[in-house]
Length: 308
Length: 308
Image (cartoon, rainbow over all chains, first blue to last red; front, top):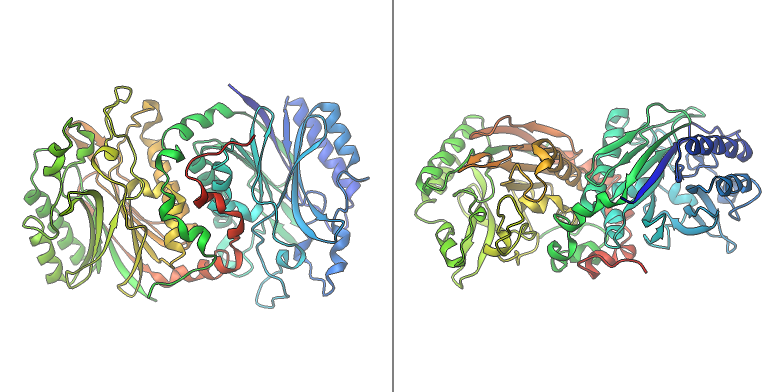
């Protein structure tokens, strides 16, 4: 048994007007609750410190810079890091990263039990679009405000296991999990902000959105024999509704724990990393079963090439 | 609307003692039923002509050759091809292929409405093992009796759409669907023979086996915006039970039709290939969203490379 007592710490909505100090206070309250439940590791959502700002269009992109963090930790998040060290609680959360060179990424970090940032991931699969789109019921401007991540999908040895990260839309792409699976990942943590309405197909509905979320996460877990911890920012942000669906999926692809509702809340599950072994050693023993000689298109071409 | 009225034609068990003529008569009966339901295309299981023989160990591999077909069509299957031409019914089925050079493959074919074989696929992801394994509750000797397929995952223009094939265990591997998705596949057909018992984890249970089946097929459909038609050989073959789970999954990943039970049976669904367009043009518009520069491990390494 190699158990990480893992807390999925869902955040309810963050309105545009809410400042980071207030959000960090909410995150600390969730961490305290995770600690009461004896967690070792707390996982927060994507862009945890602010509202999901890519829904707001700015003609001048620089006007979005106040949503970004120029350093991490910084004044606003220092109390969160301090409380984590006090609790000896590892953590992961997402934020908008502005680099010293002026580059913008949708980023998440892994922080060890000593409060040190040991891993950084930058979202690879940015959904949405770059220019204002009248045809959509709402805007989703991640391709406007962020560059695609430039760090790939690394994994890190931490908490006695091999951990990786991805963010939101990454979870729909099997490549995400596979690249980490090929590094032996035992737990993938991911935060998400998923609009309840498909901006291009309003009829889709919340149920279908949650189905696609669960399907993607469960398949990624099963097909790579890894735990997946998926944490939502949920609820109504300034009239824009985000799905819930915070859940912890085991290496068989089954939902081990799930949070109801769309408010701030925590679920804690004892994730035994040794449960990944059976899948990795049998049906998904990649070395025995994968046939890379037939996968060339996956890396050899980006888009579709139709047959003649 | 580009509708293929597709029949998933499940076969119940085929005992060792049952000969091909008898099986072909059952397949023809299913085809006639599909025709009564106005189908254009009938899909049968993997290794449709015989029992699932890889469960039987032969020290001399050549003793398994009687389970193989040295030509297709052949005397046993000629009546099936004749009936298909008569009905103007396209079809796909699986069989064990012995080539003139003495090579062995787990193969499936696409046959057009004129009874011509227009596509051949050879199973890439062979499960199981090569030598007798005392530690298993039953043998699964696909790696003993077959070579891995050497044809990749091609697609074909047929019935007004783009069709591809895979077989059984291939469906658990996201690479399978993605390689076809990158060729614009609109319908993947697959047959399977899946033991109800995990030979290495008896406690897993039928429910979990069916869950993994559905999860893999539904995720492959959703993540590539394609129809998937998955057809079982089901039931008790000489004391060895195979799962059912014959289903047709739509390009949203939802089960559009499902066959109950483990006997011979047909479900017909009008699969509109234009339903694949929304997914292919939005969230899974590969050209806009995929980032192949970060997928290198998927083709660059077969097995796991652990981090330092």
